Image (tube, rainbow, N blue to C red):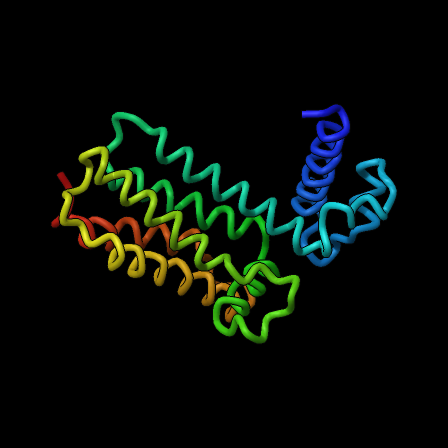
Length: 200
């Protein structure tokens, strides 16, 4: 890697880190490109070298967070699979709440009707989440935590439907529904029932 490429990567990461800090402290609606570049100490035009819209940088931040959850689950040792899945679901919904109801609304809107979503919306969030959960279940089969005949596709869609249902309820209730709390209830009352026939 050349020095120029290294500097470009550093600048890009600085923008991402700065945007994440501002997003967490001020929320999505208050986040603007000018604030990101000012806090990062770069020219406003520099932002557009790497990202088209503020939504693009927010999508990258969120993807990184969700990927870290998957990595954490895959690295866990000496934990039964129900505990791993409960932790995954809890962390997933914690991330959703962390990035706020307005970003969640964008994800839901794009998932429900991707053809009408603006170009700067993360339309592949749902597919990203589906693929991540499939990876976790397939890894559990490889690790002999789940049986070979585990219906990965079916279980993935059952669990994702629950998660997205809770995200939708949060949006529809204007924040009064508490998705993290209900995710814990789902883990406690339903998760083992869904997986029990496939556990080793």
